[in-house]
Every structure is written in structure tokens, then in C-alpha cells.
Amino acid sequence: MERELEAVNRFAKTVLTEEQVYIFSVRLCDNEVDRDLERFAAEALETLGELFVGKSGIFDHQWSARGQTARIYRTEMVREPSRVTVAGDPYCWLKGWAYLLRTEKNADLIAEIEGGIKKEVSVGCSVARRVCSICGAEAGTCTHEKGRTYGEQLCFTELREPTDAYEWSFVAVPAQREAGVLKRFTQMDGGALLQKQAALGRKYLQELRKEVTRLAMLADDGVDGTVFASVAERLEEPELLELKRCYEVRAAKRFPAPPQLRQRTAAQAGDETAFLV
Image 1: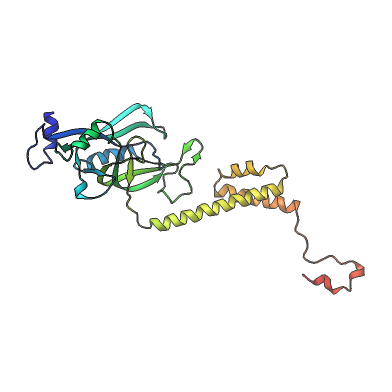
Image 2 (image 1 turned 90 degrees about the vertical axis):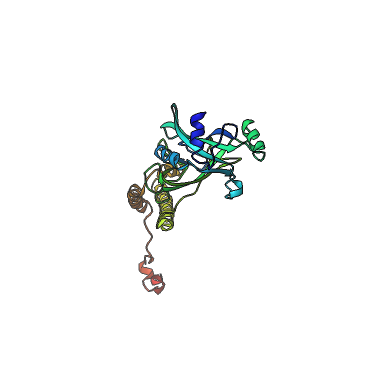
């Protein structure tokens, strides 16, 4: 306890005693994919561990000096090699030790923490990069969609390079199943334009897939449209364009375009209406 008090007193203006403080630990965040289909990289958790030392605890992310309740005085990365994340790597999480003063005002909060009522916490932080788990591109700039599975790999956004930690809060329903995360991100220059371009790219690919499926069904009566559409969803632009070219040729052979001018018989040679298009 003496070492804990020494760490606590780095943030106090007067020396606090064991009788004056209440110390508890919290699970801040981890590297598991959360309800928002996002997760922190393990390296990001290490950085957050440094950034959260000295940060205040509040309620429901309401930024107010009056809401400041506790303060984190040290953190630790906890690794559980026997547990594997959805992404397939070893599970780890960031543990924080916090203290609050044993005052009349805090008596109810201490009782709620001891009784397991105040349990879930969430963190407010900023990261420099949000990366697609499939291709490594900046999130929103590629055609991969969060929540979809490509091969056997789930698509989610990985949060990297934390730049700041604002606060941590007691909340009712956190984003992370184990701890909870409320994430605030820095926008990279041109981010909005890149996201718009990515959306247009996704729309283009979707229309291309529909067109290839239509042509395949025209070219071959035996093609199951539903099955082919499912296959087309896994293809990218180069493969789709090649299939489109091939099926256009085959469809044209099966259904040649009718002539715009009607064929005239000898008896109709004087019928000028044959040249009406």
C-alpha cells in the first residue's frame, strides 16, 4: 500500500494517507473487436497506457469539472495468451488503477463500486489512424465493408497511433463488451473527399456486379442468378471487367441485334416506308 500511496501522491497537492483515499482498478479497453466493429491494436493500448496516467474519471462522458470523480495514477498491460481475439491474435487489455477521496460526497459512489453497480467504464481518446483489417488501407478509402467476411477474415477497423487520452467514464452500456470505448478521432486531411470517392467506387462495383450477372444469365440459360451474384460479390474490378467482356460476346451471339431497316422483298421495292427507322 505504501508504494500505491506514493504513486497517488504524485497527483496530490497535500500528502494523502491510506485513510483518506479509496483505490480501485478498472478495465479501460482491450484489443477485441467491439460492437462498433472496431478495435485497438496492441501497440495502441501500450501508448494509451502512458496517456491515461493522470486522467480524470467522470460520468457518461459529460465534460465538467464538477463531474470529476477519480483519477488514474498508474496503468498496466495485461496479456492473456490462452485467450484469442476474433482477429486471431492473443488477447490483451489495459488495466488502470484509480483513486478517489473518501469524502461524504463520494461515500455512495464507493459503495456502488464495492457492490458492483458502478462497473462498466468507457474511454475518450483520439487516434491518428483508422485502418481496414483486410487490406491495411485507411478506413473508408477501400471497398471493404465492416462486418463482412472476406475468405475467413472479418472486416473491421483497427485503431492505431493514439495521440491523446481525454478521460474515462462510468457508463451503462459500453461499446466494448469487456470494458467499453467511446472513440473520438482526428480527421486526416482530405478524409471527407476520400470517403466520398470510396463510396462512389463501391457503388460502381455493385453496378458492375449486377451487369455481369445479367449478362451471364443471358449468355447461358443454365446459370443460377442467385449463385452467380454471390460469386460476383467476391470478385474485384479486373475480373468483373473480363467476365463482362466475355459474356457480352456470348450474349450477342445468342441474341443478335435486329436490323434497324426492315428487309424489303421485290414486291415491296417501291414501299418507301422501309426506310423509316
